[in-house]
Length: 258
Image 1: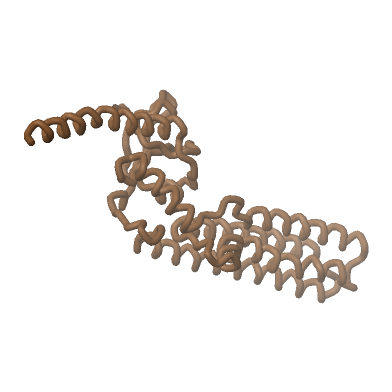
Image 2: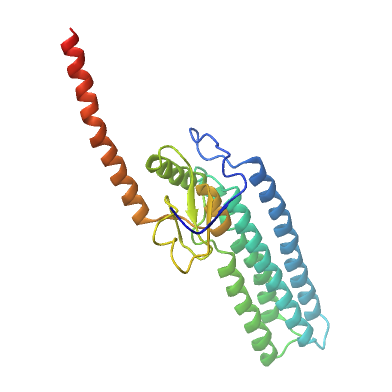
């Protein structure tokens, strides 16, 4: 058994039927909705900062300092909104059945990044109130901000209902129907056994226990530990071998009784 501190995540015992696919808990849905509201407000702040920067371009002489400040503010709000939106999607993921809607929900941060910076870039390079040097400086900063916001807004491994369902079924199939896994703060995989050497080591002070969905929600962990998976399969094979003689014995006794 593990000698480490085991922290059980609240709601880990809530079992939701996966027969029709993963269904988030009401608590997860509520948190996701709240995060999306804050993300929307942050993105509105980003777009507002962009509008402010564009308006400054129409007032010669253009105050470059304030334009750059507003670009930085725009970037900060865009990144914050994307972070909150990604977190909400891990709580309440979209389904891959509708490809367009799945893309829009998963990559909305990228879409907003384009909306929050591309018009500004266009206005900078077409402005008659900026000389060539000013256009190069402000336009370059805005373009770099667009790239940074786009990367921050892109989810390179977006969660989905189907993914959660598949991973949960995998764990339940190896874990006697129980949706319980373990992980650490710095780990990149979830585990079936709390005494797995990868997490129960001298470097580990605390092990978290929860569902597959909670491991994804809290740490964005998507992979099952290979060692735990192989151990679970061997345990199942051993149990099958041990049960086989008992079944045969019962069959023989039944024939003798006849």
